[in-house]
Length: 339
Image (cartoon, rainbow, N blue to C red):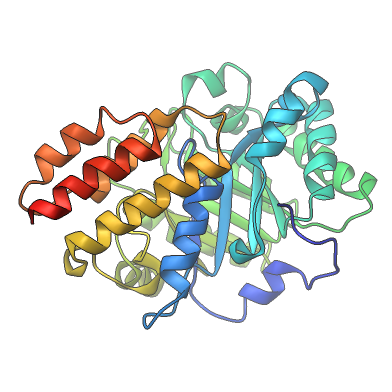
């Protein structure tokens, strides 16, 4: 389902009152409707409380949203529930015209914000002149921000438009690139502390996040800075906040296998039965909410859930052959009965 079309307070005004706030990163073929629901439930319910203060969707192609042929599939990808709020829809593209159309479509769906991906390092995205490729073309990057803002206006909305990027493309050009973005008076800017060339092969350089905060203080004091890269826990994020002065912390890969992370739970303290129960619930939601998506996408989650206990390797191997929820239910049930 999509959100109700009701007036809400600007999401960035809401989250800025607490520091640091914690965000779920947008991850392709990962942070879909089903996984966001599991994270919301496991983090925000029960005795642990907590939860992400704000979540991102997977990125969605505005070229597809601008096409009658591609729009239907992508609209299914953009479905969400009220449990997942506040929720930012991330979009990508290299053409201001299709970004305008895509932003209009997304704004009409009632998201709390729209974020433009200017950091994806994948070659297939770079070839579309999107993602991190925009770091190499600040003029077009600015045109795209303005196009998205105009698309929001055309939808009759005031949805805030933010950006997620990296410190550079083939090399670190933070000192030149970040002021270009800050000149746009963005409500929020997420900085992944690596270049496109780095991919995820080198440690994130959080001293560059600290420098981004310094530049923000000079050029755009009202822009919130969110740090991203190698955050492994809430405690780690709080420490990085102290070291850098960043306003928010975005957590990505560390959430795999630990949808409880935003409640401050260490994966090592979660029982194997609890992890397997979450795996089963996650699979059921995935099959219900994403019937037209490849079931193999779930297998990266199985690899993360099923670790650190006796028999985990054998169970993982069996789950890699699963093709439906019923398969997963049977395989895990047999494993649990043997315990």
